[in-house]
Length: 437
Image 1 (cartoon, rainbow, N blue to C red):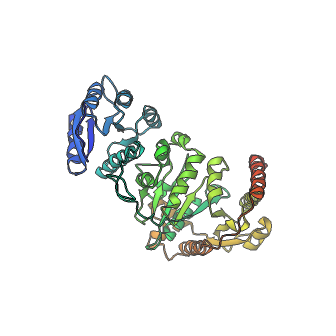
Image 2: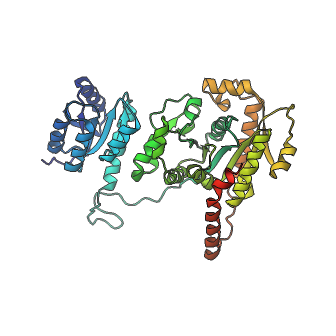
Image 3: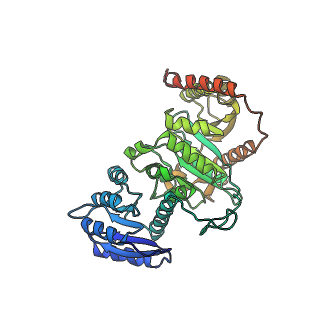
């Protein structure tokens, strides 16, 4: 059955709980561009209603009697191509997400959801569906087509800089540093974002006291539709003004994220933000390497002790094998105090790289920040501490060093190909180099 054309997004609500159907209907009634055209209480009725009403969006509950939402979604995806299914569930486990995407669902929202989250998801999924439809414009005035505005001049796009943080060993404050760098870099005249690329056990959400509704794993599930608007809906805002792309809530959900996903997400975020700070995990797997490769600066965090110095030296050897420029790596010492046996000069000689900054030992301030979920750079009580000031100065240094410079002459094609081959060989040796002792 066909329906008359409408500018509104036509929504079918499917849930076995009448109160939930009514609550969603009332919530959507306030939106001028959304129209609820039907409701259903089970999977079979949902399929029949979708065939009859041809909705743009189907809000499909996962758990229903007789026929579950995933089975119904698969049938609707086959029978009603115009309908885009958004799964709804009280559970956000990886198995549900994988099964929903396999049958053609376009997104997944978890109960309880906010009105803003649901409405923005409906609009985004509908917008992406329209973009996928084959264009059939008719001829119009010069420079335009019927029903479409004339092309506007392209807007100025950002060319954001990526700063990766990497720790020489665990528990030395790498995530704390990444968070506070992002807060320091975010100002009225520039926008900074934070990505947690410690995919299996990321701590950014805990240390910022955030309750994420979305993570990088959710982007991976709808990767074909990747754009700035999609990423924007997946970011979690913090009171400091920084927006964070968080690690998955459960380790097994990290398995859906590939290096190619990370590379493409970073490329898109460059166009959205002036700075993207990426907190990495202490491994040199492909998921971390793709961040390091694409970063303009790598902040290597160490401490004044022998194990950390040994790992720092190994990292610099790896960076040399990968042909990273020496000035790409900013070596920072954390937990420095006057009682340290090893001085910064001793460490510089050992690793053959200058120490760019020293962060003073201040366990009470650092631990208090973590336990309260408030970054030092955003806490009036901590901003004036030597530790917070040192991080702020490091952020200022990074801004200066990342100022645009004149592009060097392009490398001839043959030479570039030779360099690439050498880099490929170096990558194959990474595991042996890093794990040699």
